[in-house]
Amino acid sequence: MKLTNSQIAEAVPGMKDLAALEMSAKTSFKIAKAIELLAPISRAFDEARQKLAEKYGKRDDKGELLMEEVEGGTQYQIGDAEGFNDEFSDLLEVENDVPLDQIPFTEIEDIKVKPGTLLVLSWLFSEEPTSSSCPAP
Image (cartoon, rainbow, N blue to C red; front, side, top):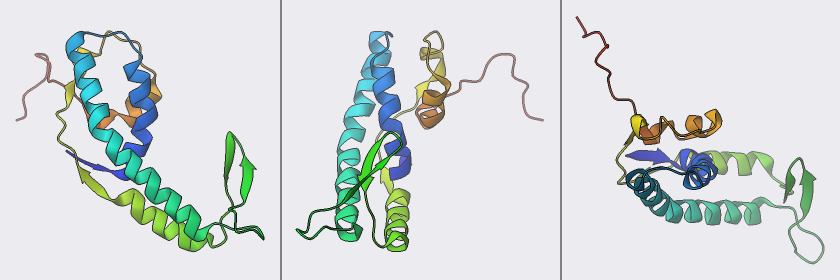
């Protein structure tokens, strides 16, 4: 399965949400395996994002990166926003081959999952055709 860095970055919180839910051992194993496969890619993405912040971040007189308060926390102050955004966009679009099989949605249909979690993890689940589906002409 091909996943962009953007999809993986968005998936990490959702995967943690899923991992905390009660489900069958089979489905739990599949979720755990997905987390295990995505973790190194997520770490490499975070390291690359940190390098971009170091490259484009504003620094004080001592050479330390400056931080600023934003809603929900803090972030680095960026000096060259255009350069940062261009490189960060390229980083988000990088595709990764991840040897993951989709999980049939039926395996989680009885579990209470937030819609936002399902939205960012839509690539992880497959919809199985139902017997009431009309065949294509």
